[in-house]
Image 1 (cartoon, helix red, strand yellow):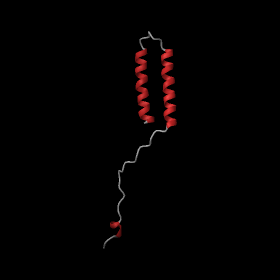
Image 2 (cartoon, one colour):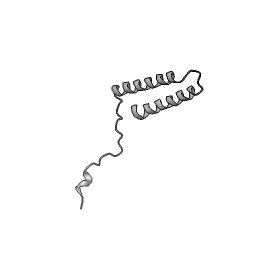
Image 3 (cartoon, rainbow, N blue to C red):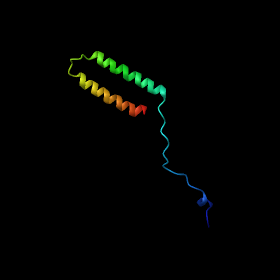
Image 4 (tube, rainbow, N blue to C red):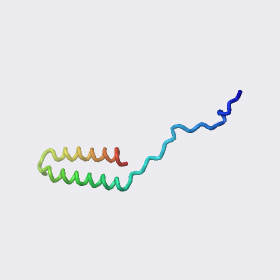
Length: 72
């Protein structure tokens, strides 16, 4: 006995779908928030303060993480 289901092509599994492109609105909102956050840090933390470099480094890493996590 031959089953007719053997002639039916099987669906391809594991086919990668195209990643969605980031919308322009989302890009503009993220840029605005990051820009305002960076300016606030520069205004609040004095130039001579020792922690300013560390704070800006952590902020930069957070911005890159957020861009790759939520944006790109």
